[in-house]
Length: 339
Image 1 (cartoon, rainbow, N blue to C red):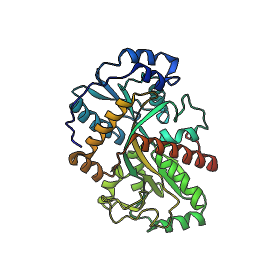
Image 2 (spheres, rainbow, N blue to C red):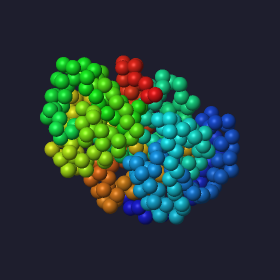
Image 3 (cartoon, rainbow, N blue to C red):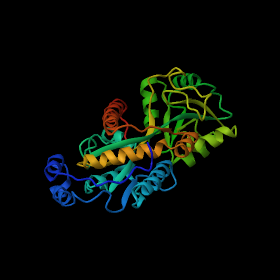
Image 4 (tube, rainbow, N blue to C red):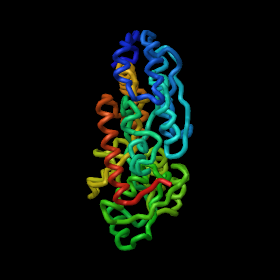
């Protein structure tokens, strides 16, 4: 798809909007406002994409790539606002209360699907009812990284040692409730080779602690760890993708390493408030897919450890529902909590 798709006005029926948005917006006021704007071309003002993480991280980077390219395509300012905290809940709650006019979006991440189970349903919003899925943008495999001097040459070595020394080996992650933390808990549950979870305050300190050997295995994505791997200070035992990753082609998948039941990974995707007009969903989905298909966008993402995903809004909605079910089951089985 060409990124130079022409803008066009979205003429919307007030009756159709009222039916689509009935009961979906907080306070019930937004459908009336939206009907008044029905004949206004979209976007009619700057579009905000919220990143639920601090500036400088991988979610922020993907959000900024999308914002810059979509701004050019739409001849309208598209900007990123960073709203970190509370395992993505601050940004997500704000989105749930936003007007469903397409000018407030979020680049959601793995906690969006995991939080309902992690917080045992005690969230100020409903993940499946209060948001409109638009497009899954990227997926990033999680790697099992060990220091160069580690005695573990394969993932089976690590599993055997963990079974022989329960509670003695430590797996570091970027933080409680993160995607890699969930992978550690899934590993413990499915393999019976228990690793003690040791949360860090982000990927950078996790890389330092793993290289230094102060954790037995670091569990996280490729972006921050890959330079240490390339310099020989880390070894990569396996990645959680369903196929080998081009950036590290010699690293086996978890299935190839003998652990097919462990299949978690990080992901990012665009979502809006509930009741987002179908025309807006279709336009954002089409244009964001076009951006991610550009070689100059796709190549650096994949070189850094991220698969471009793309797809339809319906596919993304089904994926989120499956994530909610999967991680709710893991939380029930393991007693995992994010705080």
